[in-house]
Amino acid sequence: MPLNYLDFNMKLLFLFIAFLLAFSCQNNSANSSRPTEVVETVYALDTINNVPIVAYKTNTENIHFFLQDENGNYFNNHGKLLKHIQAQGKQLTFAMNGGMYLQDYSPQGLYIENGKEVKAINTKKADYGNFYLAPNGVFYILKNGQAFVQTTANFKQTDSIKYATQSGPMLLIDGNMHPAFTKKSKHIHIRNGVGILPNGDLLFAMSKDSINFYDFASYFKNQDCKDALYLDGAISKTYLPSKGIKQLTGRFGVIIAEVE
Image (cartoon, rainbow, N blue to C red; front, side):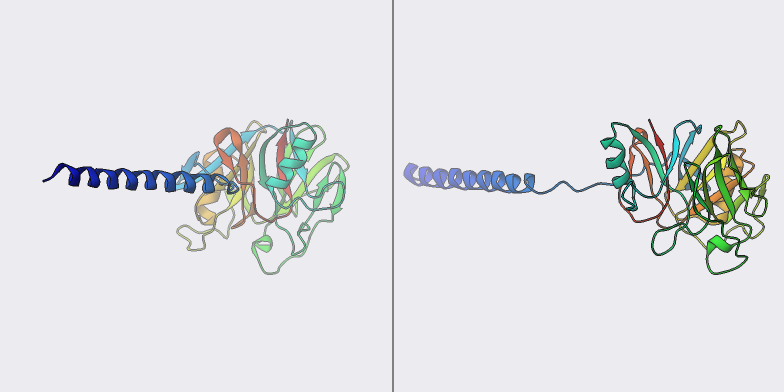
């Protein structure tokens, strides 16, 4: 084949490669200018019957309940709360939605924040939804740091309570499973809840995948909790950056958080 023909083809090849490189650089530049998406990654820290569970054990020292900011605006999610905490020069180390709410994001039942009753206790006996799957209950923390989960019927409101949130159903009652729960129930959702450990510390848990009440309650029972309360379902979110869990979006009511 003549040499000048080879030279011509080589020039075409070089021009084609140069075109591809220029296109690639332009495309990368365009992508770099796009806003970074918030990636919500959840890693399972435990399991129950092959369902991944995100769990966090802690004491009450730095636990706080949040609903609205100083202007009366609902936080609604961990992302807004995170910005609020950071603006105060503090660190948000854990957050989880903390109880059922109404359409306006106000608590469905009792809510006490910093010793002030924001919403009165809900003693309605029956209605639609998990909240009314009796018995429901209250998770509360006293001003001295002691934490409890009790059925609504047994709960006694006093001035010694610093934080309280009412939800339902109860998961465990004095070590016993809620009587309405059944094995292999097909009623499954993502769920989150809180239990009291034998040493008085708190166990927060959220299923990564859908789970029924029986299996979810069994997780708390296996951790030796005597009393545990369901907090919410499909909208459940957890923020636990130490474990790579950063769920910042969503729309819900009360948030239980650890602030340092």
